[in-house]
Length: 440
Ligand SMILES: O=C1NC[C@H](CO)[C@@H](O)[C@@H]1O
Image (cartoon, rainbow, N blue to C red):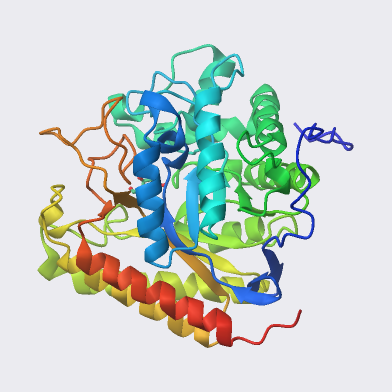
């Protein structure tokens, strides 16, 4: 489906317009700019922020305020947040969902997003909101495909068949009525008037960027090549729609980089040289990509650091060539020994974080296109009470979505050594922003 030329502008008649003049994050060459100065969004993945912000039993606003205050004390100025989840039978999908098969929205969860954004604004935080998911843990693209086909969703946590799942998710790009549903979701979110601030989402400078999806891929590495053209077209069409509906905010893809582009840098470049894509994103997964084995660190940790350094340089170099900023918006590492318990160590994680932060900062100081990062993922005060660490509806939310053990990659409020490393890094980037001369 292609977006009709003239998009109906969202109804924001009840919205306040006091954001006039409020500064939105902009792109200037390889940098983000805010209020005439270089801006480095540095922070965490906080996928469950809207869930925590919901009123009553569904959410936990008291905890959310504690989390935001702690994050603010660490110098975090940016959160990457799941803005839409789809109602699904996928066994590891988060429940409840924000939108259902009929296109009806869970108003309580959207008010949770309202509350989150309102509280983030008070702490000078900006948000990256992703509008879909290539993976199963929030319904995502495969749920749209199941709605279209009227058949049970292909569940990778049941079949174990991840290549088939990825190819199935990628069918989303080709299904016209799935795109019509998705466009309706986008119009609803960008046009929503925050029930707390009265500001329309598309006029709210707290929202730095609308992101097409979490980790959209053309398909599986083995079979995804035939989908590349429709994948690129999907990015262009969706980004154009977002620029029509939210002209003051940025658009990003949510791509993992080359590893999320069937391993082909040319596919990643083709997706991100599009003028409709304002900045690049990349993610880095030492465990998932077989670099690091927490059970055998002696044999794998040094190699992981080398592979990570190379992956980072490759993606900053591509962004340099494209002349756009790039953000490392996901990276993480297991707790020592692959443990999940909150009292387990983070020796290797701390070295990994410090090493990555050092490289990002060095490249930023050199004037390269690295413009920010988000660690994956903030668990804060959340804890799992389950012997198997598997999330069940009603449990605390942690940085690990429901498809992964709760504690796998989560950075916890009690992880003092890791928090100290994060705090130092955000301070380094904040001082970089102050010292840099940026043309108005
Ligand atoms: O977006 C993601 N990337 C990797 C995370 C850790 O495996 C995962 O939880 C999430 O789906």
